[in-house]
Image 1 (spheres, rainbow, N blue to C red):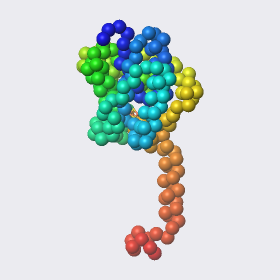
Image 2 (cartoon, rainbow, N blue to C red):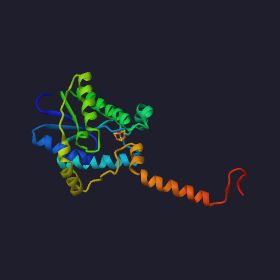
Image 3 (cartoon, rainbow, N blue to C red):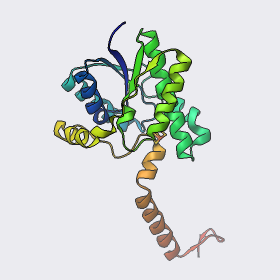
Length: 208
Ligand code: SF4
C-alpha cells in the first residue's frame, strides 16, 4: 500500500471527529482501528462502540473493530502491577493499544499509523508520542505525529451537534473511580456516620 494511507487507532467517537477531519483535509486515506481493552465495564464499551460507528458513518471513513473485542482480562493482566500508579498505568495502557495497532497495520501492509489519543487534552500527550515512536522503531513502521489538541474545543462542539455519547471518564474502572472521587468520599463518609450512629457492638454478635 503506497501514498497517504494511514492506519489510525481510534480511542472513541468524540475524539475521532477532528483528527479524521484534519487528515481527510490533508488528503490521507483513513482506515480506522478500534482497539481499546481499557474501556470498562461492558455496557460503557457498548455505548462507545455505538458512538464510534455513528462517527464512522457520518464522516465516511473505513472503520475496523479489533476481533479481540471486549478484552478486560487481557488489560488487567498487563496493568495490574501499576494499577495504583496512574502515570505508569497509562503508559502501559498506551503501549497495549498502540502495539496492537502497529502490528495490525503491518499485517495489513500499511506503512504509516497514528492515533486519536493525540487529540485529548486529558491524556499524557508526550508519553503517547514517545511510546508510539518506540513501537514504530521496534515494529518497523512509520508513526505520523500530529498535535490534534488545538482542535479540542471544536471537536467537543461537533460531538454535541452529532448527538453522540460523550463519556465522562477516560476508560478503565480506575479512571471512573478517579472521576467520581469526591462523590465516593462523600458517600463513604456518610456510611461511616450512619454506621457510627447505629447501636452496633462489634464484640457481641453485632447487637448491643
Ligand atoms: S486512565 Fe485512561 S489511559 Fe490511563 S490506564 Fe485508564 S483507560 Fe488507560
